[in-house]
Image (cartoon, rainbow, N blue to C red):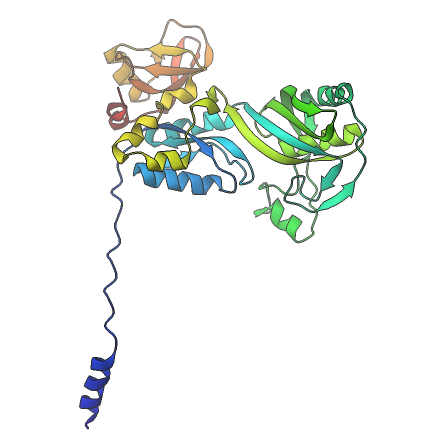
Length: 330
């Protein structure tokens, strides 16, 4: 048998492999709006964003600040024109429902870390209320080592995993309200609280501080975000529910981009003034000075962008493109 014949025989004996199926490319499209997602436990904010972006076939998307994988609840996702106002939601106050385990402190401040100290829990409701009152108002917090804050380009939790402690400066935050939702004398180790706070507040650290005030220590065993600025969890949808919908109905779950600006006063411009405003020109306006306004054209839902008013002038901050204005739902 010649070498050529031997090669042919080997090729003939080799199993026939089925061709790989062609990868289906998702046809992206311009989508504008805000999806209120009820993020599940264990999923990162970015993974949740990418899943929702794929389900909506959206061209452009972003979230409004990270919600830890171990936390659940409200994660506003921005698409298209709404991404221009994501910082507004990032800077807004947040509200959480948190479950505290009193009597134990952990290495991470939450249930993921090993228990490093156990102390008896000798508290009553009045003592717990006093501890919560102690941490209500303007306070200073030291960010936890197990956080995504960066030091020399590296996340703090990476140092913590290597056993390295980094000195962190205390930050000014505000706890607007701190209410006890559930605490039973028969089960004093578990307390559920609701917190409304300024951006940058670490509820894990708040739980630890309350525990130290009580003298027994505490860590966080559950965290659910229930509000972000004017947006609440009541209107949120899960990824499973979104995926189960017919594709044509999914975009109907989006709120308008200006839902992120709902707390701001509205300014409406005539058509000629609206066109000039969209070019970035300042406009004289008979309105009082305001740090933030949302600006509309003459049509009911024609959002043009955000601005501020100084000395009688309307000055643009973030503008939509003409294509984005035309693409907004009616």
